[in-house]
Image (tube, rainbow, N blue to C red; front, side, top):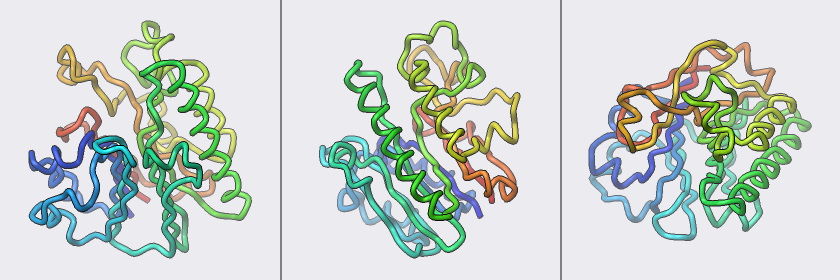
Length: 253
């Protein structure tokens, strides 16, 4: 099974520039998108043909042109849950859960803390709320896959200039500690488990030719339940696919 996650930084722009086809060509069984910045009724019918083989589920933000997640699935899930049940996060379209018999998938768009201390606090509260849900699901015996934009580089290997970004949101100690907490609560970073020393990024600022010079951060992850790790065959970072400031990442189970 192939599960691909991509922060598209605006789905309509991606479709207008005909960029989504490069991902669909890899034939993922599940496609997670974050930062869609749109609602399904805003997508032209011609563009919908790109995912005609998929069942689409949307959780857009209340604010137009902002945030939001969408999931496209070849096989219909047993259940879909949009949101955490907390209006603080659900108005921004941050999480979608899809339950299958073998495992439960979570498409997550963690907030950015780049706009100030208030947003850093909001981001950490989201980390806590989602982990609380995951703890309950783990306790019920469910196996989980969280895919999405975590908006945090976990370790120094996960960004080009760690020393210069010690006080930058996305690499703050308190943000990185929350990733540690997930790993202490039964999750494994699938990419890092397979490739402990590989330097590969998933996000580059649009400024200063960062992508061409590979001055990036690894912000997009698949965290899997420890019991699922033996079934992880590969994690592929598609850093050759353009169209967003992030690139797609694929988990193969």
